[in-house]
Each structure stands twice: as C-alpha cells, then as structure tokens.
Image (cartoon, rainbow, N blue to C red; front, side, top):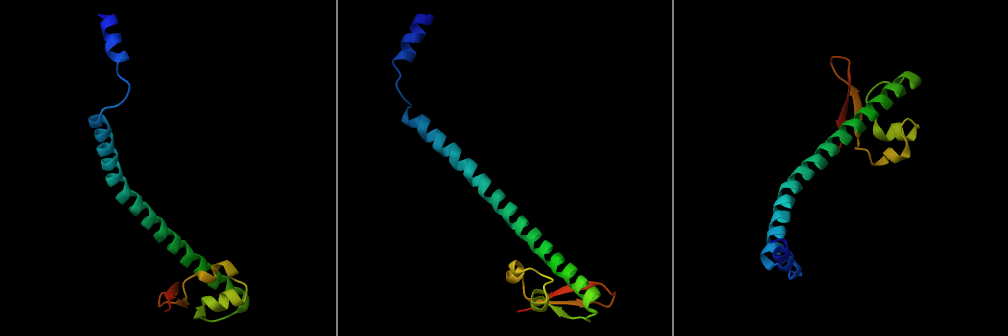
Length: 111
C-alpha cells in the first residue's frame, strides 16, 4: 500500500492549473480585505499627526506669550520667525492661535 502511494506521488512533478488558480483567488480575497483596512490605518495616522502638529503650535504660542508678553492672535509665521517653531514646521498649516471666551488657546486655520 505504501509503495503504491509512493509511486503515485513520485510521478507528480508540479501544480495543476486548478491549484494555481485557487491560490490566486485566495490571494485576491486577502488583498481585497487588506486594502481598506490599511487605508483606514493611514487615514487615522494622518489625523493623529495633524492633531499633534496643532498641539505643538498651541504650545509654542503659549511659550511665546509667556516669554514675549505678547497678546493674541499669534500667527504660525511669527512663531517660526521668532524661533518658537523650527523651520521644519514651515509646512505646518497656516493660521493663528487665539484665546477663546473660556480663556483657552485654540488654533484657527488660515487659507
């Protein structure tokens, strides 16, 4: 019985077309499921990066207010010019930091 099985296996030299197509279909299904999941991860990371960048701008404006005795609004450009933001933040969104009615700092995006 074992020798007969070994003879059957010994004669096979590759994969059949059906086996290859099955693998391709399975890979296609995996890719179709993975692409939307990866897209949502990338979008979530972008939103978190934007929120961190805005918080960095607000913190720099708070330091600017303390050290310079400046009043609001403070623009991102003035924070870069005065050294409170690094030149690498030059691609930060344009806008200004103001103090709202509750006394909290908030970032207003410019155009």
